[in-house]
Image 1 (cartoon, rainbow over the protein chains, first blue to last red):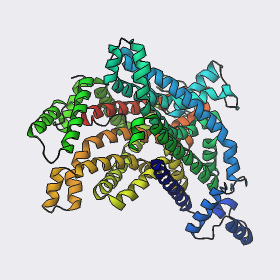
Image 2: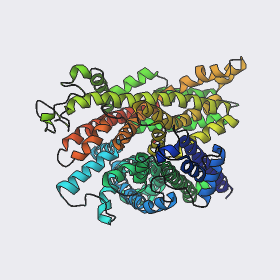
Image 3: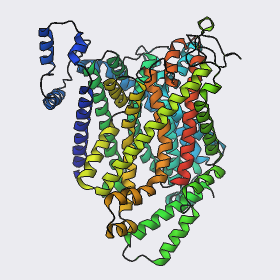
Length: 306
Length: 325
């Protein structure tokens, strides 16, 4: 319990640091945001009014505390371009990204575990080299490449799945595979190596000596104990997955968080960019925190040590 | 020696050094002897060059990858001599043509030769892969050494900063930096250097922490060697094997980040050619002229794959303790 509280405090410090860092980075941008927003030809009154509502006349540290205060109330400011609350725009976009990330994770887990287990069982034989080759292909393939070619083959050439995402389940399959492909490679590699390690343990010899069949030994004993690194790995993958979502959403025209961020850059819409990046990072940090807790719940050795 | 056998040896070595630490006050001479024998068996006593040569002999994949990388670097350096057409040489009448003998990979929407642009693009992609990784390496080493050696408040500050950098998804962080600085190749260098140092700092810090306690560092300190000299003369050289591995694996991730940013239109700007930017421009012709997207995509993948294979091979010989990371 004490460990969890300590970890929680650390997490909060990092979170505040992230907000401060992004806040400062976006405010050293050259040029006055008000002029960027309104153009050159507006009267001084409009400029003053907007400067006031955006708190741009206050010192930067005060702006920061005003922003954090707003965050706690769920207020991330107004979009320059659309004049809508950023929070609302993010909440509209988030379900798409969430669905995409969940489907991609399921795909990555399923494919990664299958490849990893087979490779470990057939260690140093053809399936091992083949499957590890495939995984390294997965890791090395840029998300946009997977996305473009899935789109070309399955949506354009064979016309089995929709070209653009329309929110239906079917239309999310290709974007999810494009996104999960990368992580599947990592999951496969880590599953293989941690399974191989687990299979060298004494209790595996015991299980074999008891006369258990190879498959039972692997599934019941070795796999269970080799899943911890894979879980940590998936939590770490969350970050790169949300990065990749930006690309997958762009290719398949999904109105998710990533699309929101790229369009915010095109529109020079600072509050939206700031909101999406902070929101995404909060999810990553929360994911890592949960994985940490899960790790200690799942592994009695760590639980006892803490 | 098979990989498995070596892994067993490594584990044994680790356990022994662990128990040696525990009984540091009275280190048995026999135990130390056994440790050294084990170390020489897995080749830990060999120099970096010897270990790399061994990798070339044993790991054909890594050797092939190294050769591929060398060829690509040569192609990039001599691009103006090899490329049949200029980087921006247009031939609008022959636009959007399929692959032929005249244009190996076809021509793009302005009639530029795709093969030539791939060659020129490799310069940007390789430089963006290598240079920011080097800068990130330097920052990471300095930060890691400082954090590990001085500990306390310095350590806490640097490591929290690293935590912060690592928790922001890298592409989004790069997007924020590119938004602030504006899209250009130079700014891309800055963005990629800034996002990559943190993971290197972590590795260097943890190695510094253990090296700091070693006897030779203690000896150096006791005869009054300055902190800076200890860090860079005595601790840093021991981090080099891991750094070579980290660097080799950092390059492909930088190349992927560059291509992703350029693909989104916020990286390298036209008329310069970069592989990611070429895909960005080709994607509108995906259904009619798919080869336009195919050529730069395959190029990116070949380079990234080669660096990953080489990095894996180097890790096996240079840094067998660093697994799965």
